[in-house]
Structure formats: structure tokens, C-alpha cells
Length: 310
Image (cartoon, rainbow, N blue to C red):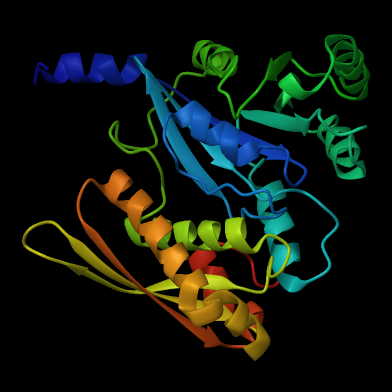
């Protein structure tokens, strides 16, 4: 690349950038879609609703265009403080975004009340609206077309895409459209950055994902994970010490499993994935502690980028 200032300025002037808020009801497949659009795992995924707790940015580039995908917590009627903070973060993600990518799980019998409320609210928002019908491999084509027509009557969607985020089918169509429509502007992140999440945060999130995948509904939202220590060695390997916080002693026993089998399996699964992502040897140590008040700790909300008083 030339170091000529005029050439560099010209390259900057040619750049395009779009911020895309990916919104939808819990379990619509938002995180799976973002991972597919970015081309690597930037957000954890599980069948448990409300797995995503905060906004996660996945960054993709094509030529002179950068697309920043903002994966958001699912929108639903919140009851607890953490839920209120999560839904507030999802709505806040629309501020300053160029596009709202509304993801709908079409495998349900009918769109959820949360989905309808979201679409009706978006109908009056000053933002370019894109509809993504996800899991289309699980619905008959005739029913899919009727659903698309019905949802488009509720809001003025600029485009409708029918995809299977899990299989990657037609996901590239979304990326191509956004690349074509991205407004001119400077890039928000370096061209080699794929996420705004640090390796330390990613490690904690991967452990939480493995716990959700194994515990399912037994212990869905009463746990959190923090990386307390991160030691890098000369050979590139890393030793990570992480604490799993639960709210009751009975929950600690569930996370540990019989003879420690559960926590051992979780640690091994997280270690293998971290080694693949980081590209070097990883040692994972997991501990379980009971802290009943962790959902009321303002410092945790600050770490997650959530508003404690939402």
C-alpha cells in the first residue's frame, strides 16, 4: 500500500460503513445469524431463551465496506432487574444504527407476541427496516409466503430475506445487500478486528454457553461466569481461572455434578473451543461459588455494558 497522503485520503473517502442492529424475540436465531454473517463465532448460542445478555458487536468487511452487526438480547416483557437491563440494551442498540435487522423464527405456529410488538414499534422508527425470516427449512413454502406478506403489512420493510442461519442458507444475500447499501463513512474498527469482545470476556461467555447447553432449563439464568485470572506463558499458552457464580447451594451441586463430572465436562468443552479460536494451548480452571446477590451488583452491569437502573 502506498504511503502517499493523497492516496491514503482517497482510500478513506471511498470507505463505507454501516451499523446493523440485529433484533428479535428470544430464540429467534439472532446470535447464530450474526456468527454466520461475520464468518466466525463472536456470540454464544444455546437453545435456552435469553442466552445473550448484552450487546455483542461482530465486524465484517468486504472491499471498502465495513459492516458492524450488533447482536442484542431478545426482546420480551422483563420482570427482573437483569431482564430490564437486557431489553433496554436491545432497544438502545437502534439509536445510531443504519439498519434494523428484524429476525423472526418462522418455525413457531405463529409469530410471538414479542415479535408483533417489536415490528409494530419499529414501524414508526426512523430507521431502515429489514425483515429476516429464519429457520425457513422448518416451514412449508406456502405458509412462509403468507407469513412474509402478513408481517410486511405491519411495517414498511425495505427487504425481506428468507434464510436458515444455522445452515448458512441465503445468509450471503443479506451481507451482499448491506454491503451495497452501506453509507459512506469511516470504518469504526481496524480491518482485522472481528468483535468488540476481549479474549477474557469470550472465555467467560464460552463457559456460560457450555453450562446452558448441558443444564438447559435446570439452571437457566441464576448463574454468571467471570474470568478472574489470565496468565500468558512464553510458549503462547494461557492459563485461565474462571468463577461460576450461582445463587443457592443446591445450584452449586447441580453445576458441579456427581463427582465433579458436570464442571469437568464444561471446562473441557470450553478449553477445546478456546484453543481453536485463540490458536494456542489453553488451560482452564473452573470454580463454583454461591453469591445470592450477584444479579444486584452494579459493577457486573457496568462490565456487561448494561444500565443497572434501566
